[in-house]
Amino acid sequence: MDKEKAQKRMTELNKLIKYYAGKYYDEDKPEISDFEYDMLMVELRNLETEFPEFKDKDSLTGKVGGTVKEGFEKVKHQVPLQSLQDVFSKEDLYAFDTRIKNSCQIPPKQLQGVASLEKGDKSYLQYVVETKVDGLSVSLEYVNGEFVRGASRGDGLVGEDITDNLKTIKHIPQKLKENIDIIVRGEVFISKTDFDKLNEELDEDEKFANPRNLAAGSLRQLDSAVTAERPLDIYIFNVQKCDSIKFKSHYESLIYLEKVGFNVNPVKILCSSIDEAVKAIDKIGEERAKLSFGIDGAVIKVDDLDLREEIGTTFKTPKWAIAYKYPPEQKETVLKDIICNVGRTGVITPMAILEPVIVAGSKISKTTLHNEDFIKEKDLRIGDRILIQKAGDVIPEVVEALKDKRTGKEKIFEMPKLCPVCGAAAVREPEEAAYRCIGIECSARNLRNVIHFASKYGMDIEGLGEKIVETLIDKGLIKTIADIYYLKLEDIAGIKKEGKKFASNLIEAIEKSKSNNLDKLISALGIRHIGTKAAKTLSKKFKSMDGLMKASLEELLMTDDVGEITAESICTFFKQEQTLDLIERLKNAGVNMNDVGVARCATRVA
Image 1 (cartoon, one colour):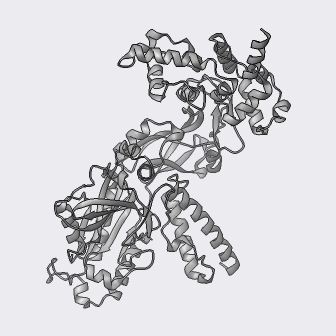
Image 2: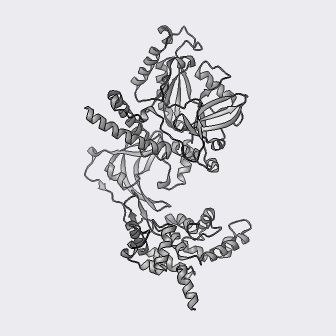
Image 3: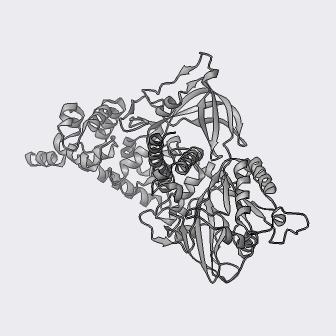
């Protein structure tokens, strides 16, 4: 590659990597797989080596990718929480071993791990191989055996004080079995089983991408009560600082950590040579599907702590450790069909129905295809033979269509123009990748519709919160928004202790909401792009619900706070039969349909 092309590509890679790192580390919403991100980093690192004059001073090849989230106190780490250099081949592992030997002042005979030396002899070059747990790295600080502070990794030098959130994790001891001052490092994660259970309760468009992002998002909640609801766990894998104890080896320190009460990474294999270490890494790779927790590789570390000091570190990574990344296991199968599911937010998500296949230890028969753009980008067709893999060994994903195996019988898929559940319009707006059902009475999105309608941003019905709405829907007492105004005292009384009093108060709140001004009702309907401010503007201009429903696109475009997209959204919403039916039922229930100014004029005339 010539210099001009190299500089252009390095600029492009830096921009891409910073964007994807922000999505992964700061927003916990990855847009590409770990493997794809790793390959971008490898490409950039190689180009920086070949063309160092073009290296960006802010390149993430020399930094940890995270930042401190607003709302948390900053914590300066006493010992930096470094990241590891990733490698992807066995040749890289042996090259690592050669670098270690070349940098140590140890006689060659001892470096070979000869049988005459006992494994307890620390002149022996030993490695510890561990699983690289796929979670969020944290430091835990103990003073006199008491847990006093915990922090996220952040950028490696400064993290977030997440002590209260970490205290909700049962495997983090609040008091150690010995009264020592110590700082340790661990990885917070969610087990595969718990992750699957949580995701089963969510719609396709709401599911978490992987356990790592769920764990990270849970730990970085400003409300620790939210964190406490998540089944977080932790494995400790390193002593960061302990002035009172002089450990000779890493493996010895891990055994000590278990002794004083820490939940230490269960996969820690002491190896007497690089050959043993490579075998251990292979063994972990063979067994990784059986592990209860997700991993994104295996780590090989020099065991002798004095040798580590001699070998040293770079700003970002220690030279005495390296992370081996396993290639994702890919399997071929058939894309039998594509069906569409409607989530509670109205998002219509295409789902691949697959010929069942075993990938990374699990039977896969379906997976999300995300949206129309994803299908077009991959050029997926019904009947295609495709490759699938598990992202992070957990979430199945389509890698590519095997186009050379097409027979000509494959069918091009098109997103439905009508909601597959209720038949209302399915709309894709310019700034979105997803199609949405806009049916106000769609059963698939009914829960969200009712919750929003009753919220402070809608009709502000006191007592009609999310849990009560869920109960009313589960018991079949309401199916649509309008049903709220047809509830009876005896319907509600049985759903809560002291039911009669609660039911009486709720009926009173529902009755009170009927007299809300028109803008509250407009906002409560959940029309796309209409918030409380725009609702007030529309109420003042069109004076009544009938006036708004009859407004032309041109009239809406001439209204303050209403642009082209919003105007089209309003017109489409009021063209739906479901909307007309709902408005009629609300009218019949006595819900106010006029702006308060109109109501006052009518009162004065009377």
